[in-house]
Amino acid sequence: MKVTGQLKEVRHEKNIPAQCIKAQAYPRISCTHGNKKWSPANKPSPGQGPEASGRLIVTLDQGSPVPESSFGRNKRLLTARAYQAVFSDTCYKVAHPNLLLLAKPNGLCQPRLGLVVAKKNIRRSVDRNRVKRVVRETFRHSQSLLDSLDIVFLARQGMDRLTPREQTDLLENSWRRLSRKLQAEQ
Image (cartoon, rainbow, N blue to C red; front, side):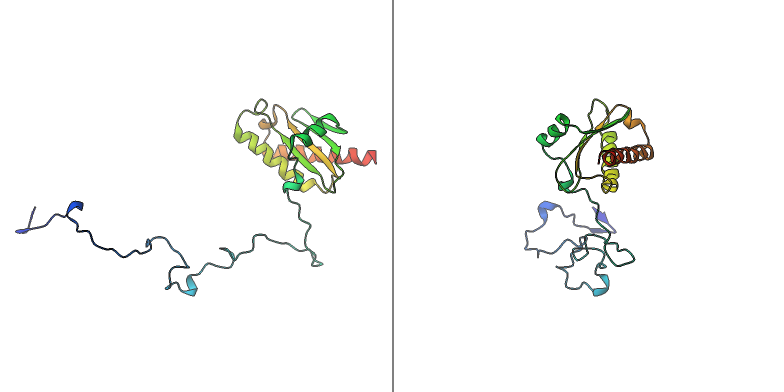
């Protein structure tokens, strides 16, 4: 190739001599532990990284922490035996054309929830997951109303046609109805 009267050498991969190249970190990936030139001004803020606290704790005016209403493993029905116990010995029912709640006392100190959202009733997985998310969220907020119960939520056809706001309202109403049934019996 001729460039301004001189021959320019074209280098191909096969012509590159094998030489020892120093191993160095990829320049576009930042790693604070490996880069000694990292200035304190460039370090992540306390709200980021491994030093950050994993949970935000809100306190009341008196300084006591707000009771945590989570949906951990201990709040779920996990085994087929637990589901079967509710199906075979249902004490409380809350029915609606779009859902069915079955419940029975569990002898524990908190309510537990099991979800049955069949593909037969709600075809699209996106809709099934949204229904389950709304059920878990409303249960989490309403578990203080519910005594020690094992509850199974069954979705019926048409639940996916409701908007998330309508689903939330329907479920909050259903949890209140279940709570009233518990109060009436006691």
